[in-house]
Amino acid sequence: MNKHNRTAVSGGWREIMHEVIFEADTPAGRYFDVLLIMSIVASVVAVMLDSVHGIHVQYGDILYRVEWFFTLLFSVEYVARIISVGRPWRYMTSFFGIVDLLAILPTYLSVIIPGSQYLLVIRILRVLRIFRVLKLALYISEARLLRQALRASRHKIIVFLFTVLTIVIIMGSIMYLVEGERHGFTSIPRSIYWAIVTLTTVGYGDISPQTNLGQALAAVIMILGYGIIAVPTGIVTVELSRARGNEQTAWACPECGRNDHDNDAVYCKHCGAKL
Image (cartoon, rainbow, N blue to C red; front, side, top):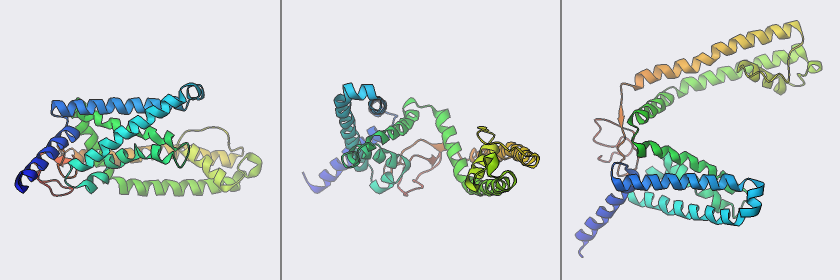
């Protein structure tokens, strides 16, 4: 076989592997994703059962073998994903690439750090691939719109959270001065904790102001909390309305594996490869 034929064969099997692993439009791709999701759910159930003392004592050895079986299976799948894309680093640094890696690392780390295998519940994040399998186009579209809106509004939300943090620090410090240790506000951090609980309208009731001034300040924080809840909702809503004008496809790039492309896209916006 000459060099040209070898290249053609190599490109062919990689293309087929990419289609099976990253796409859900073909029967093979659909079966692959269904089996993958079933394996993910089974592995997460095994990890959760192993955390139950009675089950661990009786079936610990079996669950340990099951855990390693799924870890090796997902390791092979992870390597196959890397091989099947033209630019492995792009996939490895993507959201699902990182999740796929984190899904197998805890078992290997458990050899060095006992107990770390319980972090394997992160595998449940991989079930998000079920949206591709079931072809729920409406939900996929809405999920992308939400992601776009959150990404676009992240700077505003950060400023908002910083403002809220400033408010609870100030109000907590004032309540510490007003109420003092005799009423349960034993330190500024504990008073800040009370301010956060009150501002978010959770209200555990483990600490409460006893003085008239303290109760008046608490009332202000409670009312302020209701107003603050609406702020991030408004920010994201505005960005959602903007994002609706930029619909995206579910096509997976053959090079980096990303699939958040515009409907009329010809090239991948992440790596520049032709779709």
